[in-house]
Each structure stands twice: as C-alpha cells, then as structure tokens.
Image (cartoon, rainbow, N blue to C red; front, top):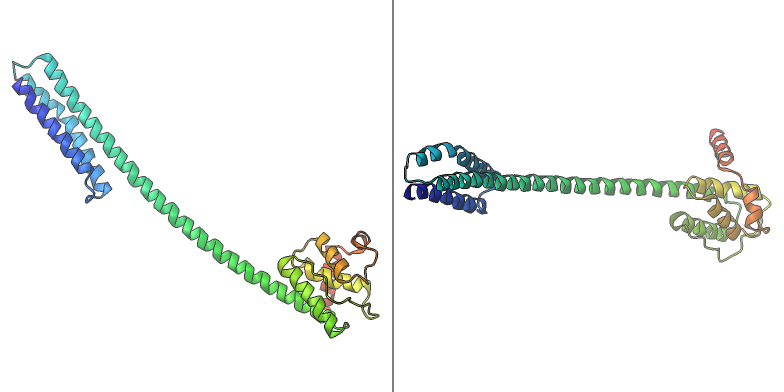
Length: 236
C-alpha cells in the first residue's frame, strides 16, 4: 500500500498546484493555459514511469495499481480540459475586443457619413431655396418672405405652413410657372409628389382653387421638370 500512496499523493499535489496556478490573477490567461497543457501532457506521459514504479512493488494489489493509473490519466485530462477553457476564454476576449473595436469604428464611420450627408443635404437645400428665391421676384417683398418661410419649413422639416398672407396672382407668373418653380426645387430635394401637391395647394390657393385632386393631374412629372431645368441651365 505504501508504494501506491507515493504516486497517488504526488498526483494529488500536481492537481492542487494546477488548480492554484489556474486561479492566479497575476499570471495572464495565455501563460496559464500553456502551463496547464504542459502539466496535462506530463501527467499523461507519467503513466509509464508510474506503471513501472508500481509494478516493482510486490505488495501492490491490482486494484491499487489500476486506481492510481486511472487517477493519473483523469488528472491529465482534467488539466487539459481546464487549459482548453482558459484558451477559449482568451480567444473569446480577443474576439469581443475586436468586435468592440469594429463596432466603435463602424459607429465613427456612420457618424462621419451621416454628418457628411447632412452637410450635403443642407447645401442642396440652401442652393435650391436660393434658386427658388430668384424665381419669385415678381411677388412683393412680403409675399416673397412668406413663400420662402413656408418653403424652408417644408424643406427642412416636411411641414406645410400656410403663409400668414394670401399670395396674389401675378400676370408675369402663370400657374405652370409656379408648378415648375416649386416642383423643380423640391423634386431635387427628394420630396414626394403628393407632398408637393399639398404644398402648392396650401401656399398658393389663388393659383390652384380647384383643389389638390385637380392640381395633381396638372402637375408636371419629374422628367419634364428636369428637362426644363437643364434647358434653362444650358441657355445661361
């Protein structure tokens, strides 16, 4: 029995050392799982010398012999299992750190992209509103301010605000002209046709007294508006 106890206690000592080493916070995970892998390999290879050592003791029973060998193998595989868990945790942390870094980078890229898009949209709105302002010079100054105020609210917030004054009919500005000016401005901003119809009907009620349904049929399409705008730009 004494001969079998020596390797048995040695294996227990190795198991305790492995446990303590695996729980040391001062040692990084990579070193811990590497050392545990080494201990596991040593324990599995130790089967041969332990077997020879115990075979030399005639007082050892076959039960003690098998018990020590099985325990040695079990400890070896257990150390290997703990090492694998530590390695998995290391890889998991690395992947998590990489995902976090990618997420932060993506968020930064999205923020930059949105900021760039907002700047482009703001510049586009400003350019189109200035173009519209240049087209409605035939109205009085008060009417121009009212039209542009409604146009700004519609361009920036999608709100249709009826002017505080009624926009009067002008001989130098036909119904077709008003539709062209407004449609060209807001089509370029990506506004919906139905929303533009509502804007025209509410901001220029004297120009479109028949209502939105009739106006929707009269209003030119995107292609015709673009074609007229291009011809106008080419003639400059």
